[in-house]
Every structure is written in C-alpha cells, then in structure tokens.
Length: 375
Ligand SMILES: Cc1ncc(COP(=O)(O)O)c(C=O)c1O
Image 1: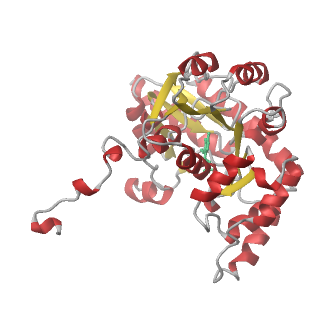
Image 2: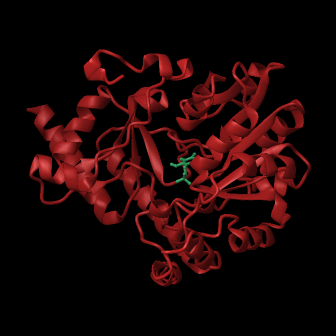
C-alpha cells in the first residue's frame, strides 16, 4: 500500500532502528561555497590527510580505471597477502573491507545478538554505538576521564553479556591516546570472553616508543584483539574506502561470512597495494603533520581556546561556549569544522590539522570572530 493510500511502513521497520539517529555527514565544500557565496572554503572537518594519494597510488588508480568493467577481486588476495607479510601475521588473520568503519560494522554483525553488550569509551567514534544499536545489541558508554579513555572503567563495565570492547587509540574525537603501560595493564586484566577492538586508524601519525603496535604487542602476545588500521588517513585514500582488521583467525573467518562479496573496489585495492612501501612519504607526512599540529595549537592558544591533550593524531578537540554558534560562525568565514553532538560531545568542536595554509585561514577566521564579539 502506498503512503498516498494511507498506509505507512512503520510496521515493516525493525524496532531496533526506532531511536537511532544516523551519522550526519558534514556539508561538502562546494555546497558551503555556493550557499554562502564564499570564494575559498577549507575543510578541517573529517580528519582526512590533507595530501592526495601517493604518486604510485595515483598511477595504480589510473591503470585500474581501464579495468572497471570487471568486478574487483572479492577476496582482496594480493592486498591481504601483502599486509600479512608486512605485519608479520598469517593471511587468514587479515580482513580487508571498505574502510575501518566497515570492519567495525562487520565485527558487530559477526558477533552480536540482540541483548548482547558492547563497551566503549564515550565520546568516541559513533559507529561503536550505532552499529550495535542497529543489531539490537546494547552499547554501554563509559565516560572519558580527563579527556582520555578510562581503561579501568571499561574493565569495570564488562559483564558476562559483554562481547566487544572498543578502544580507539588515539580516540576520535579527543585526539588523546592511552599509552603502552596502560594498554598492557588493560590486556593483562580483560576477561577472556571479550574481544577487544583496538582501533589504530591514526597509527602512522605517531612515532613514540610509548605508543604500542596492537598487532605485534597484543595480538602477537596471544591476546584476543582485532586491530584496525586504514588507508584513509596518512595514505590519502579516504575517498576510495580501504581499511583492514588483523585479529584471531576465527573472528576474521566470521567477518568473511557477513562481509559483502565485493567490498573493496579494484582501484582501492590497487592504490593501497601501491602505497604499502611508501615509508619515506609516510615519514614526510608524519613530520609535516606534527608541524601543522604545532601551528594549529599556536593558533588556538592565541585565541585562548583550549584543546584536549596531548593530541597525538591529526586533529584537536576544542571545548567552546556554544559549539553550534561557533561552528556556524566559522562556516560563514569559510572554515568547515566538526560539531560533535553525534560523538557525544555537544560542547566541543573537532578541528583537523590540514595544511599550514589552511590553518592560516582558520586563524584569520577565529581572529575575525573574536574581533566581532569584542565589539
Ligand atoms: C577512530 C576511527 N576509526 C575508524 C575510522 C574510519 O576509518 P575509515 O575511513 O577507514 O572507515 C575513523 C575515521 O575517522 C576513526 O577516526
């Protein structure tokens, strides 16, 4: 029956979706430009790397374009093999999906029945809450302590019904991370019935002996952990959607059962493969991000805006008096940042570092805003 005929579809829709507010994507640059009649708009909203794909990846994408009449390799064999080899694990321990976000969704589908519990720090990455809710599972949100994930409190929130614990290190949106000693202590205590998803989406940005490698340090030591990584950030491939999980073989096999057959495009697989040996470029981008973060922090300091810290990835979390008003004011000055209500932090904005030039635009917008409010 059509809606015009007086019917509705409420009875068809799963009750688990009733209270669910979908992830709200930010506005595209072109739309903001058009709507507000702005010449230049900078996007510091989505924690992407500010640089494009590596040159080798650009070539691989151009080559792949000629073969797009074919379906991709559904098993992503070459990429899985290459990742297994480089990360020192078996092929069967690697799943490659349409972004780390897809791995989050698939591990939920593979593990969660209605009523099962999932523990996550909060504010954190929205999918850790949305994906369990879609399945009728119960997300347990554990407040951060001093803007960092409180691993002791996560452990205390685990019950016999808990199947998954999500730990983002560093955490999005706060940009802070738990270090090796804390994570060692967590893994020593986490009960064996739980799978920890250690999300290291920003892994390559951090060069610090106190920051662990989840694959070598925890999976390698026999802990029950699924480590997430992505090509969306430092590799500059966010638009192609390639991420991966490395974990216990039986979990990866289960993800293989729920994963879409052709999850990752040919261009995505080829570009990721071509990027894998870009150690020099990664180092260059890591260093340039550190400089950008220092500049961003200086710009914020100048405007007396405080951010959560230490911020170790490519973004900062800034508490402000009125996040929506400030978001709007920045938008009108050509700067797109991220309001964080959907991340559980309505009092804050998240700002991605971008390039030095983009940070200057932000600095000018903030200075103008301060001047207007001082009038
Ligand atoms: C902590 C965290 N996990 C996962 C993702 C998603 O990454 P992908 O683009 O690979 O889906 C993000 C992206 O912002 C993130 O911040």
